[in-house]
Image 1: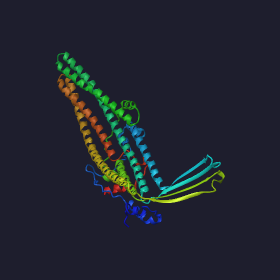
Image 2: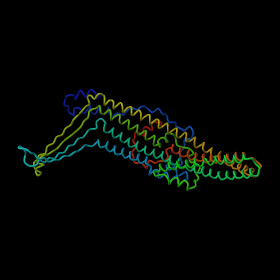
Image 3: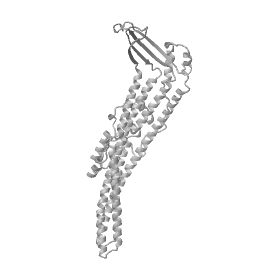
Image 4: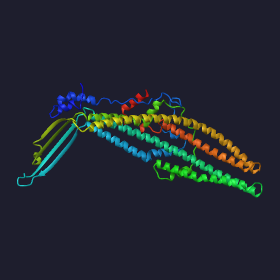
Length: 492
């Protein structure tokens, strides 16, 4: 049977009373047209079977609480406090509750609505009835979901709830990474500040030696001025490092939901804990498996499911609406005989949109455009996830290499500075040689600290990219079945 909800049904009900039984076959057929699966273009993103920069192997390390693998108790405390106290997470959790309430509202559409009324009135005037008049009444209505408008709204609300839940999980994933990276940077800055202050002590000694040698007529005042310039350059870095450390500590305070102050004191008071080699992930799962664990990809996927369901809801508005309603009431002059006479009615009505200037069709077009936008957003989230993993894998590998090279540079620079300092004190070399050697040592020490921090940050970014930092058991939201099928289809 051919279904044309905009023409054939309109002709049937125009200006006439139509029996619901007579319309039954056509209404069911129209319902099949309205609830047919929405045609969404096949995703154009081809998920590779393997990674370009790493082998696909099962992950042997649990990445749910990956921050504990860094071996820094203070960092772990900051992260765990952020999960509980971060205000952005609180906002996202409230939105999840809103989505859950919206789902309850959508499911209520399956049930009839009931209402009751009661009243008392007294007439006045020459022809008024004696005494008060009492009345009670009740009414009910129920909309039949023949064309999937209610069920489509429920599916969209379920997908919205899942998207909100995954968005909350993704926000936690990102905030955990921000806290971890900020703490690593604060640790590195504190170490560099300690090195700068220690270097100043050596440079004070060098300046004093240069002055003694100058007073003894062994060297010119050039050595003294070079020593002063070197010390001033190092001293100038101390306020910059202090400012950077304070700013980073204050950012951590905001992330973990407390005023500035305590975090800075804690970082300064505790010595930097050793960060282990984060080569804890020899390989990771295939791209399709990683995408299923990424909450941002799943949120975009659920958003596509919701947008697809809304197309059906919009289309159903072009089709007839069937509603059953009834009333029951009674009214008497006294409470004792209130229920002696009861009246009621039952009505089954069908309404069909005839003309609205294209408003409803525009809503359909808007829903279809929204689905295309959701599809593009989902595809973009897949590309972003693949980019994150590939880039983080390279960063981790290269940061390991940089740490090894910087260890060698620090060892060589330390030996060079020690020899230059001894030779200068003995008058066997000039101050320029000592100046160069100590500058190389300071640069090598800062480079080693930076490379160690970069290695730890690369580990954090890689675990973030792999979907670590959250657990599905921590969130109470349903996963639409359609979302899994979309992932499976895309990974084929």
